[in-house]
Amino acid sequence: MAHPLQLGFQDAASPIMEELLHFHDHALMAVFLISALVLYIISTLMTTKLSNTNTIDAQEIEMVWTIMPAIILIVIALPSLRILYLMDEINNPDITVKTIGHQWYWSYEYSDFADLSFDSYMTPTKDLLPGQFRLLEVDNRMTTPIGMATRTLITAEDVLHSWAVPTLGVKTDAIPGRLNQASFLISRPGVYYGQCSEICGANHSFMPIVIESLPIKEFLNWTSASVSS
Image 1 (cartoon, rainbow, N blue to C red):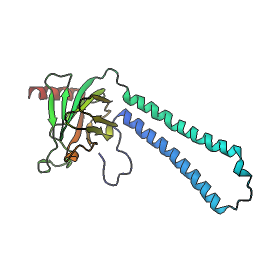
Image 2: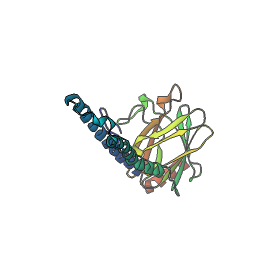
Image 3: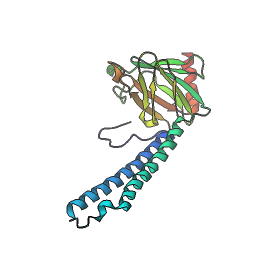
């Protein structure tokens, strides 16, 4: 959960988000090194009297400022491509949930369980319980088991939406007439919040996403209670 004056990302709750945080730090270090080098060169040019004009046609310098950016781009691109393929890799998911975006709420259908589907609306401010977050809490949470690969099939019924949960490193567009898929594996129990990240209309900011991760035994108890009700 984000908090006021937070400068960094939210704490990772999935392996993919941990990789994204590492890549962010890796890329930021490259940006710091480039900025320091450029600042040093600018300060040197401003404080040093140039007395040698032979450097104007120096091929060595031209080779350096051509090769160095290429190396930096490779150092950044390789980890980025690795994470991209990890995010797209979905092999034998343990559970599949179909997520449907509406104006302005979400619907969830559990394909592995018969008759398990529900709508998820934002909880009005007057109905919030102590400790619940305004504009982020919902009446029916999407519930998933801990340590199991979860695949989400994401689509929309009316307009474009975007299903995004920052803590899990998931952000996928919900497009009418098309199924997009995303996967995540939650590594610890908890409640994770997200919101629609596509401007989808007047109540765009009032369709939050809440995922609750439970141990497998409690998850099966939840599915049994939800189906029976």
